[in-house]
Image (cartoon, rainbow over all chains, first blue to last red; front, side, top):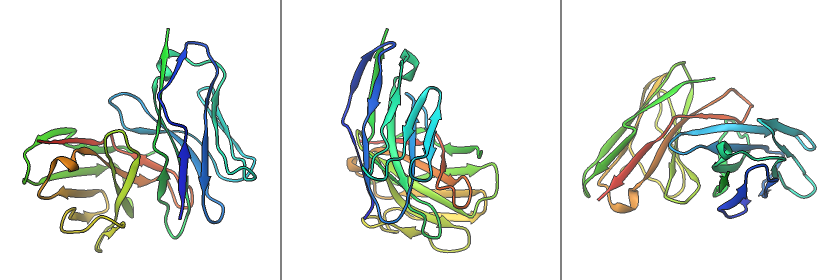
Length: 113
Length: 115
């Protein structure tokens, strides 16, 4: 079956530090990959996505590259801000008539001034 | 994008009672999905709700515990029946962003605490 594994948190960083949150996946076929973000007290929002190998998704300074050879989709940001503090979920979608998402457990990011 | 409204946003419930969560979408959608997010855990798909047919439940979830209604293309309800403290979770309604995109839009969730 499909599964997503991401690094456990919390990840604690100082403002302007470099961020990496690791995500690897197991899936049959060629899934689409996503990063969702959940800010405190809010619902999930799509942060970025990639639909095929070697695609790079980017948004708000965050980037992730779909690496088929390593089955990975690591999230990176060069300089984090306090406002980036949130829980980040890696997910995959394996379309089979309709799309459902398989999520990782989420990684909490805490950024201090 | 779709705007998804859920009610209630949060509630505190007594053991043994049932609660119905409503999900309203601002556009017509074929499928709606209900997820559960237990404390400190990831999101787990409970069921997929198609308008005009019975909901399809994932392994570990049954209709008697989580009955779902889908009366039209913009609305769905999820009932959590005979609640126990283990049902304390955030329940999220979601819809597809479009065929073949794989992306989902989520409501803000309904946070239930069962005492």
